[in-house]
Picture (tube, rainbow, N blue to C red):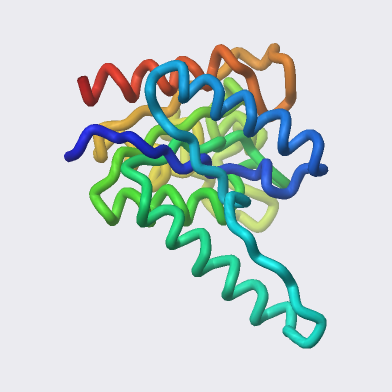
Length: 183
């Protein structure tokens, strides 16, 4: 695998208010630059919605633009902090899988130190009687095992941070780990 130079920054931050998104992404890009890497945000595109375009057509253009950004990156660092539920943002999970399928470096972090089973109320089944996996992993086994099998790692924050979804130290730990693996 090629030493990563450009890192795709997957995560739910794209849904945050603009100033919050910009602040977090700027911090990530600054930290990556400190280590000689370039951070690429999913919003680093120039997509303009036209008045006549359907929302579905715009959605497909965003998908293609993000796929093109990922094609030009050698790795991903994904924010896998639970978003709108007990698991990571599904778009972020897709991006991680897409990058792994391309043979690219994949690392992640979560600001929630609990494992998936704990977040699901530490019960063997849900209210419908469906089994809840209990493997001591930070999220669904396909996410964490995929990242680890690709040579990456998921870094868990300790729950106390500067932001519910981001911490400089946790992100920098990801960056340092990525650099060490590809030194």
